[in-house]
Amino acid sequence: MKGGDNVGNCREKEEYMGRRPTKAADNQFCKARLAAAEYNERLFAKEGASELLGVSVSTLSDYELGLTKIVPPDMVVKMANLYNAPELENYYCREMCPLGYEMPKVDIQDLDRIAIKALSTFRKLDETEDILLDVAEDGSVSEREVSDLHKILKTLEELESVTQNLKAWVKRNL
Image 1 (spheres, rainbow, N blue to C red):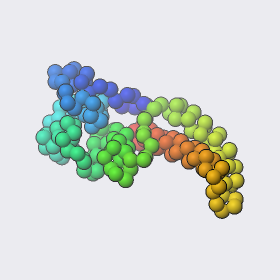
Image 2 (spheres, rainbow, N blue to C red):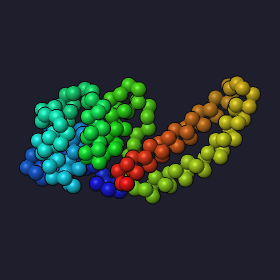
Image 3 (cartoon, rainbow, N blue to C red):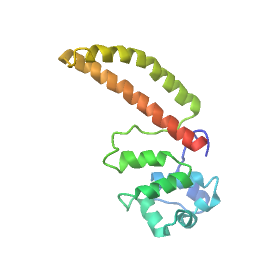
Image 4 (cartoon, helix red, strand yellow):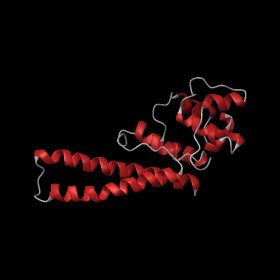
């Protein structure tokens, strides 16, 4: 799975193999496994995937059905590596870990899309730098500077999002 391919629909891929998950169809772990199965046929079946992950079939089923509320982080890392799906780590942090709920969502796109977003954000940084200097100059934030501070944070969050997306792209493609 290279260069921004979409993960795809779990139902379609399992249907192709003669099985049709119903409850797991929209589960990120199931989608990632079946997308990876295009490159490793053993991953089409939970039996093959569970063997490669070192867990029982029922445990993997519980993850994919959402019956395990918090999948162990080391298992998420194993799945992300085996499925070549670094976005699973981001999904885990954003959706399952109370410490990471504010992380930007990783949406692995093609490199050119990420580069354009990065350049657009870099362009905003010059203005952001000037605003930050104006706000911080006197050591306090006045009421009229609060909106400027929010603008600064928005630009930095965009930069963080671009950074996370580029990291995920590199992890998947290099």
